[in-house]
Image (cartoon, rainbow, N blue to C red):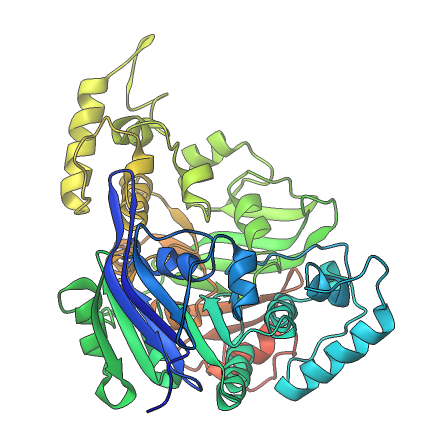
Length: 507
């Protein structure tokens, strides 16, 4: 019988008020790609952080290649052959690729032999198809290249067991396909690969086995020939999930939002938007697709008044709103679901009632110098009911809510304003399949009411499901606009990487 690369037994981890992992067992074989699936808060990241030496289990045992291990730090895990590629990369921007890869490696001398290190890294990169220039600085690389550096860093340090946390979240379809080919090559060389994902299709595409977590427990481990999307979704959330929300044909009205040659700078005073021209119509969902960092955040902020437009013009319902204050733009009928729901969208330490009041306290809830908390509480209760938000105490800090309930609270507030335009940025990022289903339904209901929706997302599946048209953003420019009825995933991916739109792609 083949010896297991990893065996975790009865892993239990408690945090104050939370049982994150409850008696979990997990095994990984050499040469296996093992997917770890579960809702937000199901315990996936906690379990992998225990394996990577970041947390210590309260109860349980771990075995690497048959030997019991007790990791006291990430260094212990690395020495045992465990490498983890985090969703948010751990790289030093001003260092070269080679310097980042050898940083902290065992046996590294005070004086580095950069030439030898670069040569070793080139050979390793060539073997696994992880093309990257060892002499390049990290800040010069694309997101996909940075991910390759993280993988190379783990391989260079001798990892036999590689953990990847949501590795495709920032990749184009072509980069995702390439990553999967690379992972398969690594598995064929005898490594064990553990991939944390929320995308059921990825499990279908690449998994040898999948373990599903729910409420801190491992509810099932299935082989490839036992996997169906429907069964996986049911195991994750405990009920049937609607994968494709019904999107009725919409009669688009007048242009609600119009941008003409809009330019704006990023936080480092470098060009972020370079002549964006586009429009969104009444009753339309206009999707913005692109690899992260190509101007998506700046586009949302310049429309909502949070960033200065250096040139060009922005119109809402034929009224110029260029460089108006956020408060004035809100009054003109623009709602905003920002990517940072806890930093920009909601105030973590305030309760749900206070957060609902944030945009209406000058108007809806103002009673002279006082605020009408009675009306605000009644409105909050209605929104909590209408949007099915699991809320135990309206006065408790919203930081205690799950990601899905936070997003529903934010959507409830923004949609209750009955906006002309809703700007939704990564509305389901980090949400499980059940919460994603709810958010998609709410967006389509808003579309049916005639609201113009600008949807910014890194998930092409989401954009295809919801959008009527797709604008592909690349280096601060709209590189192509396509009607989703005629859209092709490959074409979209090429546009995301900078290819020019051909004349036969219908708009």
